[in-house]
Structures are given as C-alpha cells and as structure tokens.
Image 1: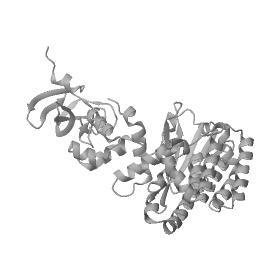
Image 2: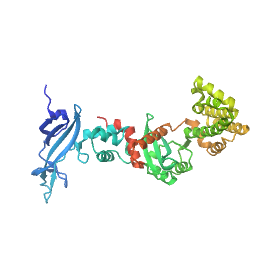
Image 3: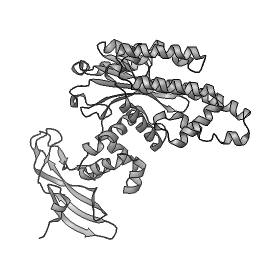
Image 4: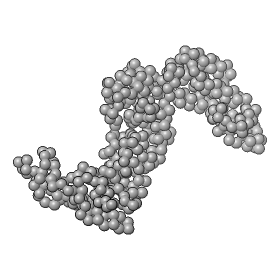
Length: 413
C-alpha cells in the first residue's frame, strides 16, 4: 500500500511539488492547491491570478526524528468585487505565519512547554526563543475566559512574594472545577484591597452569584474586598495559614532552646540531637521509632520544649476533630487558656491572631474547606520563577500557570 506524502503530512489543501530526504532534515516544496484566496478587504473570493507571492518557510512535525521544513510557494490574486481591485496573497489556515510553523507543530511546541521552560524547548527543538514567546502570547490569553465557566462556588485568594524578603507581591485568584482540579482565574499585581476588589467586580454578575465560600489567608485587604463585592459569601481562614502560624511559634521556641542547650550540654551530648529539627516539625503520628526516641531525648533536656510541642499537637488534633463551628470555638478557647496557664510566651502573637480571626477560622469546621489547591498553585509559581529569566510579570505567570494546568488537554494532538 502506498501512502502519499500529503496524507503523511496530514495537511489539507497542500500540493507537494518536490521532496528531499536528507540525513539531517526533510525538505518539502509545495503550494496551496486552491486557485483563489480571500480578499483582505471585502472578505470575498479573489480568483484573478495576479503574480507569484513569497515563498514561506514553515517548520512541521518531525518524521522519523528528522525535522521537516515546508517551503510553501504562494500566489497573489486580484479581487474583482472591490472597485480598486486590491491584491491578496494566499494564506492557509493550517499554519502560523508569525511562528513560521504549521499549527500542528505549534501545538506540539505548546505541549512541550508544559512543565518546561521556553529556553529548554527552544534549545531542544532548535527554534528561536522569541518565536516561542510570541506563540505562547498568541495561543494563551492573558486573562480568564469567563464564558468557559458556568459556576464558581469556591474562590481562593492568596499572596506570594516573587522576591526574597517578602517583596514584589502578586495575588493569585483561583477556583476549582467539579472534579476538584484547580482553575486559575487571575494573577494580580500587588495585594492591595482595591486591586482585589476591582478583580472581583470584573467577574460577571451571574458567576459572582454562584460564589458560596472564599478561602483566604488572614489578611484584611482580602477579606474586606470580599465583604464589599461578595457579601453573601462565607470567608474561611485557610487552615494551612493557621497551622503555619502556630507551627512557626514552636519553631521560634525551638531555636531559643537549642541555643541554650548548645551552651549547657557537652559537645558529644549536643551532637546526639542532630536531626531533631525535622523530627520536631513533623506531625507526631508520622514519626518513625528512631525519631520518637530522638524527641524523647530532646524533651528530657528541654521540658519547656516538650510542653510547647504538646500544645502544638493538641491544637492540630482540634482541627482534625469533627467539630461544629460552636464546639470548635469552645475547644480553641480552652486551648488558649491552657497556653496562658503554662506561662509560655512563644504563642503570644498567634493567640492574638486566633482571637482576631476566630469567626473566619471556625468557619473551617462548617465545610472543612482548605485552599490546598491554592498552595499547589503557589508551588507551581515557585517552579516557574526558577524556570524564568528574571522576575515574571503577572501576565506571564497567568499564562504559564494556565499552560501548566490545562496545556495537555487544551493542546492535545
């Protein structure tokens, strides 16, 4: 059975004139089979041959691991429907002239960008970096297409610093689809209330009406914006950020105690505590027997650290228990009273946070909503930061996040 080169290329409307198979590449000379084009002025058929047009070099999908280059000979046609008889060069809908490649190859490049860098794809495919960047900008919108969404139900708001030392913030706005997968809605420059408020107001009214809960970190700029634009939505303080607060408190106590122990213990005794930081940071139920023995040794040396650790684990147990909002608040207040009775000061700042955000924190127990998907997006941003040259701007971040989340489906072969 013989197969024509046109069928192998899978490009409709292409007529191959010459084929050259080299050791390094496959070169195809071809033309568009039709004898007309669409007038750029009136949009009707232009059928009067005027002259040969330019020859366009297009990269296509490889064959047998050899890159394929199509040299497309075009023609110009004069429009007889327009009074001034303008001429228009033929153009096929199967190639991207700006990227100098077929759309099939462009899709393969976009799929390669998923989880990779433009520089890596450019190097591997031996293609210009600027062409890839332009392709990304044309194929991936700089903002969400609200027409593709029927409901939101849950929103996630989180901030992330693009520079060390908590500088150059962006705000990530996201949601989840019916299968629980993250949906990127926006990456906003800064974290100011008015910026977040303006974005929330840009959500079409019929979608805003579907928002039931907003999971956010404990930041007034976010919660005030939500209160003004989405007054019917329940604000839930994200459990991840709550846990981050009280776990950081114990970590500060650990630093102080380890400093004191280093001065009080003999060098070989202190060396026996090596690796205790990781054991101390893990949840108790996840510890190995070796780590439990290490903690016992640490707590013998530092009873105050034992007490702080017990309080941390007790608070985690409260969040793991199936409380109602009311019973959760009672349990949290009992915990707060217990902390104060111990005389430990490491949790002082967290106690203030707990008091100020009690309503939003205990809203967690109504539906046990967390923004784990938001943290997943933040981790992706950290990876993108490492993959990009310099600090990516919000539009670039949105495009790369969208591509990483949707690319394999959106650009499937």
